[in-house]
Length: 184
Image (cartoon, one colour):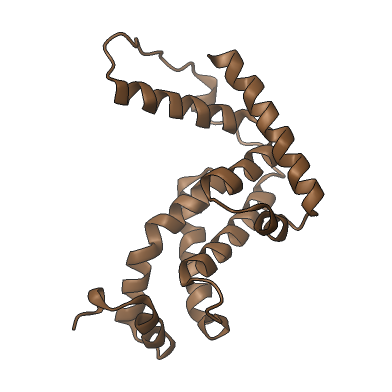
């Protein structure tokens, strides 16, 4: 039986034994999702890739601490989010101005667009509006709506109280609503 058909628990046992093929298979299964998680937080492709790879190294080195209370993917995602937030905090001390933000973007005519194209443009507008929010609002909405974490998990990740979490999400939603009404 090949490693690609093994279930994750079997692969993790092999990873604990130092089997590099099993580690590669686990990496291949989770790398794209973990990259997506990281890039939404740090907003930089190269940094997200580095964070994702460092997170896998950390996960493989600390695999014996994985208790199996949650799925391996959730455990790995927590490592990626923590590493991404740490990097984001380091980067937030500096302001980087990209050339893209200086030059104006060309606007597309919407008369030749299919319904699928329009919904993609609307999703892009929504994400653009989210990116314009205050960094704490953007981060909490990403964790809640895009990553799917509930309030208790967000409290743990961001080390905030439940009441503060609810208030921040409520204010972030209201801020996003205001931005969307300006765009539409």
